[in-house]
Image 1 (cartoon, rainbow, N blue to C red):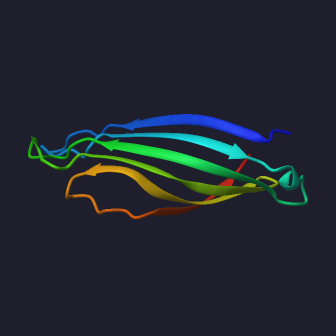
Image 2 (cartoon, rainbow, N blue to C red):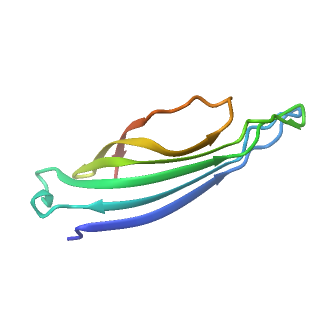
Length: 124
């Protein structure tokens, strides 16, 4: 059974223009280190838990309105924080919180003090 996990990922979203307006392109990236303590390594009928340290970042392009780029509409942000993942048979539940470590965002974006997420997954 694995006790340590490392992975990285990236995603890029690009949107089509409609009547001179276009949502900003979005580049996201992440790096994760996970650890599964020996005492947490269990099999069904018990939950199997892992703890992670997650780093995520996002670079948002500029917003277009009537074919003109809006100044101050781009952003570059990075977040870091812990999370846990529990797996029971074919069901996974993850919860985590991240805090900003870098922020360069225009006035169109709210200032985030933290991000909190709960995810449910079904494996088949």
